[in-house]
Length: 181
Image 1 (cartoon, rainbow, N blue to C red):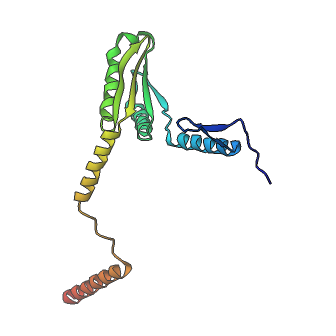
Image 2: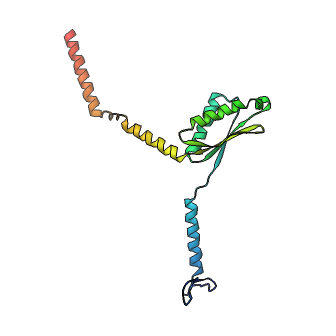
Image 3: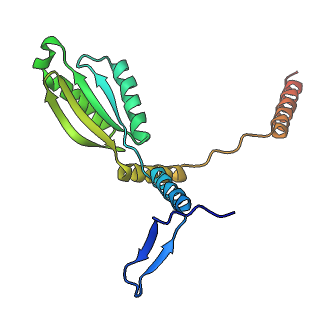
């Protein structure tokens, strides 16, 4: 059974004397190109920007919840755009929004970097945080060193050891009763 060859698709060696031409199987070449494209897509990473919105008068519980979510996004490798939304006369106090953004930046300092400093645009103040691989690696290294330096917890006792201790205590209790009685 003969293979379909596309005679229009030829490869010419430019420096060869006399010129060398190779007739190629077009279907095979198309398949190999698709496989190479698939591999390159696998290796590439898509940068996703997540957004978290805060308000200047946010309660501490809401702040903690939203900030934990921001930390989760950063640990997953996403960038995070943080927006402080001002309503009404709140825009006259941009320092409140700036304080919130500073708290978030300070809290995520170990594994994130500020990619875009806080800016006030009309009624919104925005800041962009991105994961910092260098800081995260150094932080993980220090955590593993601390874990290695921490004393190991002993293994829990087996059932036989527990029974032996109970028997010793019972014998001691019986002995003390006989001494007292």
